[in-house]
Length: 91
Image (cartoon, rainbow, N blue to C red; front, side):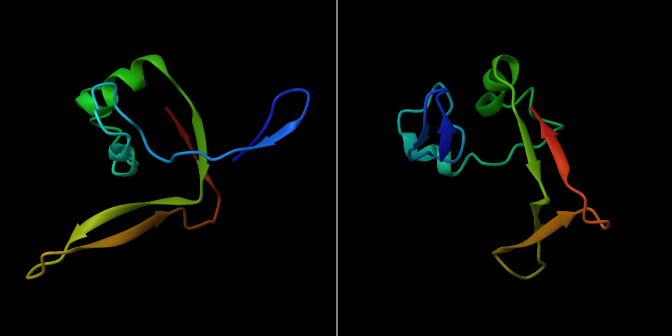
């Protein structure tokens, strides 16, 4: 990740995902990368961050998981706009 301190640009590592306040292990953040809009304000993992912290994430699309009858694994489905424009996810 590159960010500007005002005096210089800095290259640093970053962790992707949300680490809930109650988590004992930072690695849980890798599993907490998607939140559904309909449960964002009520799920314990996301509720506190949703109330106190906000961000906007431009994206070309997102994934939902589809249950495939007769299989244990779910199939990823890429959801995107047909016109190719970007979504703006606000949290």
